[in-house]
View 1 (cartoon, rainbow, N blue to C red):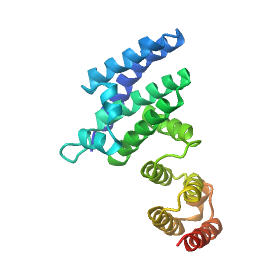
View 2 (cartoon, rainbow, N blue to C red):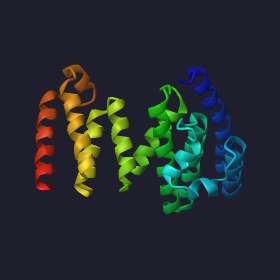
View 3 (tube, one colour):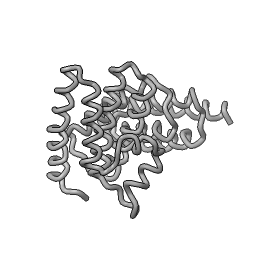
Amino acid sequence: MINKDYILRIAEQLGRELSILVGLRKRNKQEEELIAIDNFFLKYIGMTSRFINSLSDEMLLQTLAPLGKLNIESALWIGSLLHEEGDLYADYGNETESYYRYCKALFLLLEAYYQEHIPDDTIFLSTIQDLSDKLSVYQIPMHLQRKIFRYYEQRGMYARAENLLFETLEQTPDETLFADGNAFYQRLSLKSEIDLQAGNLSHEEVEESQAQLTQLQTQNS
């Protein structure tokens, strides 16, 4: 496990570089900001934005984990810079380019979150939440939906996880997601009422939702 102080140092360094990007954006220097982002990619990752965005999520993950262990620092940098790049394209009105960067950024940051303890008081957790909110209006790939669902549960955001589960199943009644949902409710059934209330659910709601999930699965079988 990476030392917490090391993650905080990455966050501090990232914050300094992001302040440069914010300054450029305030002065409406979008082209200069794109160049600066690409320079940061080269400086900290040794890859260009074009190359990173040309890779599928799985290929990018393999590139950052050649020996099976994710390079957490690179994942945090890439995810954060893609988030900034996505915001810039959104400002341009280029929704397609911003969408793909948001998806890739969230994929990497969630992967880093699962593999390493990321302190709550860093920019990375707020970036994950911002990306989740921005992508909530889109139909995103199933592998990313499942990562967000898992993230909400791990953060104790049970009602949000439940909403995402049923919204996704309405769009794509996927058997894997049904299995995820059944396992989710089994875990929730073992939690105390206090824990569930903290996540905006109750045991009664868990039982009702589990029955609803079973009914929906039966209808789609």
